Image 1 (spheres, rainbow, N blue to C red):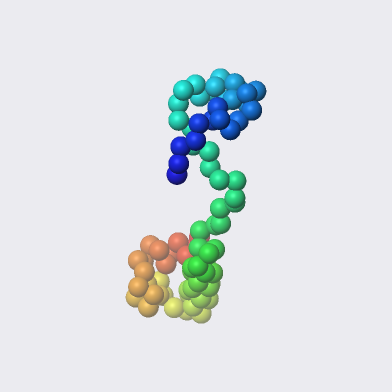
Image 2 (cartoon, rainbow, N blue to C red):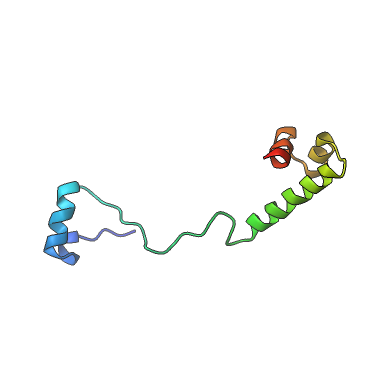
Length: 85
């Protein structure tokens, strides 16, 4: 991230408006591009959604929370959150 002097690139009217909020301070302006949701880029979101649906299906089929916790390597409380949440 590089530093740019706002007086060199912004119109004077906009600069004066900004100075009413942040006078002489450093201001970060984030990129306008939209940020992707968690797991959307690498497919992990879909993976966990499918895993959780499978856990719910197995629970409805009669598997116990303890069995599912051991099978998936998750904490008992995590399995309960997936099932009841």
